Image 1: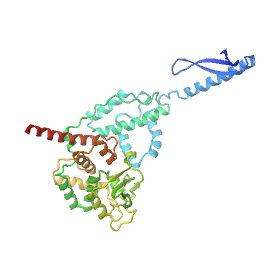
Image 2: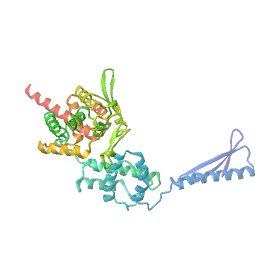
Image 3: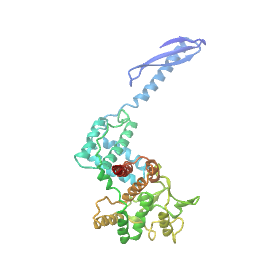
Image 4: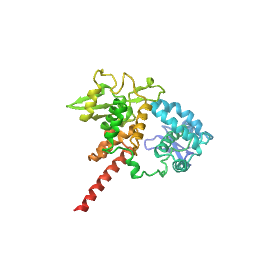
Length: 374
């Protein structure tokens, strides 16, 4: 410790210590009015206490070696489960199986490196044949787990952004299979109507609004609102269909993410569906329920599989297909991508962007071909 006299006649008592994180010397100081044996003792004690407290904070952050990924997951899961919707939790449980299979519960979390994870993800893509969304889900969940491990001092550094994964490239014809062409849509809806008229109304509503199936089924009569002569669907909830029984399905008061909260302007066709569906219903009733019962997603998807088979349709046909078809139609009409993303509740969706680019590029090629006729 040493002492420096200040211009105001006070004394500054200073001590050095070594920062174990950087190896550099740091200083702590305290001021007294006098420089006596008594004040020097008091200063020494105060400075030692301050140094001890600073070092204690660092030492408490010493990495706990030997902690396995499985142990971290077990500690993290109860917290994560309370933070997310039950459907998101179910999605995590699927990703967890891949984490356990390809990374392993017994690996020490402090030994996991970005390069190691990239090898895992690319093996899943190209060796084991998984698609991009599946592997991206695993990557996203692992990042959450590693951030938790960092906060618990199980790893030394905040997980850095991974080196770019070599994701599978979608071929143009693959993107084109994610939505229906305008000549295909009427045939598909007509076949669905033969199976169940309400199914047709549900999927047609998806096409007309771009809403997710959970958002559509969670719509109540009172969620359709009129503002300045224009009708909107207020999207403020989604259907939690993670339960085993349809009777246990519940409406959750929050959709998939913050950008999902939105008002969707209704076209005249969508408005006709609304007027038909609201007949005999109270304002709190669900618009697309039948006898106060929801349809299981198994039944909805089964109807789509049957239609795909009967029409020999060389396209993906899921509930999301109608949402993608909505995006393709808006792109064809010249609506900007950012407005489409806002309408469908996606700030940054890879598939939305792919469909948009596919349609606009095809339109550009069509007009480019016309130039040859000049």
